[in-house]
Length: 401
Ligand SMILES: [Zn+2]
Image 1 (cartoon, rainbow, N blue to C red):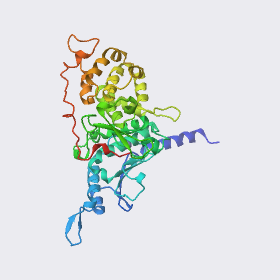
Image 2: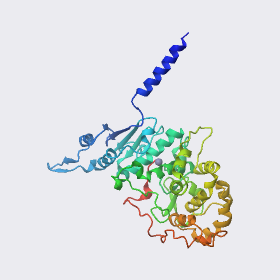
Image 3: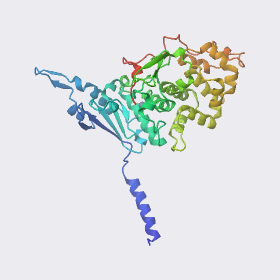
Image 4: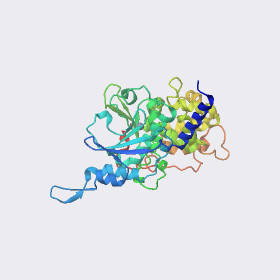
């Protein structure tokens, strides 16, 4: 039988070894994968110059720009010049980022994605114009999985998550589980300040979510359940289904964005709920699940949550459903009808400030209409102003996974 003192010594020695060991997790490892699938580790711009030289010699012996390498170089310039992104250091593992020029791989393996275990991220070089926001998006997936222990879409096939074409777009209606997973990633991908980097803003493409309805998300698409790639499109002002909006990644992202901006400690509360350890037996699946937990813990936030949900779902929830979800009975019973009359169909960017405007003098009370035109809140006509798309690319084509 082992003497107790030896066991104690062993535990102490183990604790000392763990404490003395260098930090082995939370590092970023970059790899370049070329068009034929060959991989090379990258740790400096010297490595990049070696693998992806900025110039090449053409057939006539002239030195010309290496256009084939330009996009991958752009991404590495952004990544190697950026401090370790938000939260990577707290991951329980090292994170490998593959920047890929490889288009010979199976269709499902192309594009930008994070792996099922979250330990590998691929950034396809066609994403170079938004390199930082795509990395932030994929890191958010990884972080959610690492901290919560599971993804809301766990166990769902690609077809179930994304529809018959197995692709998804920021303005697409998919499933509420997909929308939460992608919406949380979009919410972080839309905040390049997460990198705390003064450089490369042009590569960050902030505002991918934009102002729904007047920015770069004027309409929402839904794929046919049977025909891959067949989409129907609905303008924001004509949105009539709350279920569709809860299944929209852009709307999930916009709700999270507005919660972070308008609810006390909203951003940190989002992280607390999203990253709370989950089990397969007991877990959240949708943003509505998170809202229910939120209101149970912070009932005084319910009124603000109801207004944010209304602005971002075009007032499409049934009043009873919104009350059951948020507990905002006073807002729903006494103010909402007036707001619907005045604001339904307008962009959330116009609607939200009015929903949060303090009541004008003498009009506090029942209708809410008194708050509409006296707030001094910023307003701009639909179709102008707001957040202009910051990228030349079609922003709806955010086909990262
Ligand atoms: Zn994603």
